[in-house]
Amino acid sequence: MAEGVTAAACAPPPDVETDDCLRDYRHLFSPDILAGQVAFITGGGSGIGFRIAEIFMRHGCRTVIASRNLQRVSEAAQKLVAATGQQCLAQCVDVRQPQTLAAAVEEALKHFQRIDILVNNAAGNFLCPASALSFNAFKTVLDIDTLGTFNTSKVLFEKYFRDHGGVIINITATLSYRGQALQVHAGAAKAAIDAMTRHLAVEWGPNKIRVNSLAPGPIAGTEGYRRLGGQSAEQASMWDTIPLQRAGTKTEIAHSVLYLASPLSSYVTGTTLVVDGGSWLTSANSFSALLDVWAAGANTTA
Ligand code: HXC
Ligand code: NAP
Image 1 (spheres, rainbow, N blue to C red):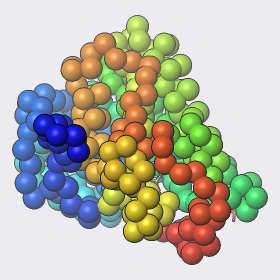
Image 2: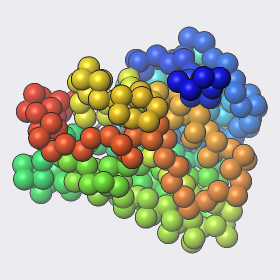
Image 3: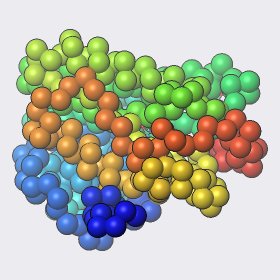
Image 4: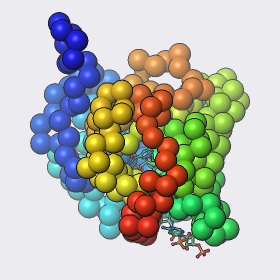
C-alpha cells in the first residue's frame, strides 16, 4: 500500500457468511434514512437479498421478502424481525408467474398500505458451456431473471407505483461486459435487464419512478459465489488480480442498494452502478479454467 494512504475507505464492513443477521452493525448512513417506507424484495430469503432486507430494516424500512420457498422466506423474516425490530412480511411467489406476484403485492398493500421500493433480486444461475446448455436451461434463466424482473416491475407499477411513484433497483451482473465463459444464459439475461432499466427509467420517470441497476462482482457467502466457483478462485489466489484484491461482501452490496433506494440518489435514474472492486476490468476470463471448475461439480443444482 502506498505510504500515508488510509485503507479505511476500502475496508469492508463486518459480515457473516450464512443467511443470518449481522452480529454488530455500525450505521454509516443516517439510521432513519428509509423511515416509514416499505420495500418489496424478491429472493429476500437468502444471500444478497437477505442482507439487503436486513440493512433496509436497520434504516427504518419495513420489508416484504418473496420467493418460491415459503418456509425459507418465513424463517428469514423471523430472523430479520428479531434482529432489527422492524416488520417483515414473507410471501410465496414465482416471478415467472404474474398472478403470484399480483397476489403478493395485494397482500403487502393490505398489510402495509404502501410500497416505496422494489428490489428485483431473484435469479437463477449455474456454470455451463453454451455447447452443453439445453434450450430449456437457457430459457429458464431468461424466464427467472429477465421476464421475472419485467413481471414484478409491471405488477408494482400497475398496483401502486403509477399513482404514487417509487424506486426500482434491479440486481444484475457484469458477465456480458467481456463475454464471461460458461455464462451465456445469465450474461444475456442480465444485459437485457440493464436495457430494461434504461427503457423503464425513460417511460416511468414522469411518474416519479427512478429505475437503476446494481451489478455486483463476486460476493462471498452467497449461492452465486458457490455455484460460480468462487471458493476455488479464492483458494487459487485469483482475487489478487481484482484491483481491490478481494471478493465483496453482502453488506457492501446492501449499502450500495441503500444508496440507490434513498433520497441520496434522488437525481439518479437509468444507470448501472457496478459494485465489484474493479473486478470486471482485470479478472481472468479463462474458458479452460472455468471448464475445470464446471467439470469438478460447481454446476450442481441446488
Ligand atoms: C446445466 C441445468 C443446470 C445446471 C438446471 N439445468 N441446472 N443445466 N447445468 N447446473 C437445466 C435443467 O436440466 C432444465 O433443462 C432447465 O435447466 C430447468 O431446470 P429446472 O431444475 O427444471 O428449473 P427450476 O426448477 O425452475 O430451477 C431454476 C434453476 C435452479 C436456475 C435451474 O438452479 C434454481 O432454482 N436456482 C435459484 C438459485 C440460484 O441459482 N442462485 C444463484 C444466483 S447467482 P432441461 O433441458 O433438462 O429441461 C447469480 C450470479 C450471477 O445469478 C453473476 C455472478 C458473477
Ligand atoms: P441466492 O441466494 O440463490 O438468491 C436468489 C434468490 O432468488 C433466492 O432467494 C431464490 O429463492 C430466489 N428465486 C429464484 N428463482 C425464483 C423464482 N422463480 N421466483 C421467485 N424467487 C426466486 O443467490 P445470490 O448469490 O444471493 O444472488 C442474488 C442476486 O445477486 C441475483 O440476482 C444474482 O444474479 C446477483 N448476483 C450475485 C453475485 C454473487 O456473487 N453472488 C454476483 C453478481 C450478481 P427460492 O429458491 O426460495 O425461490
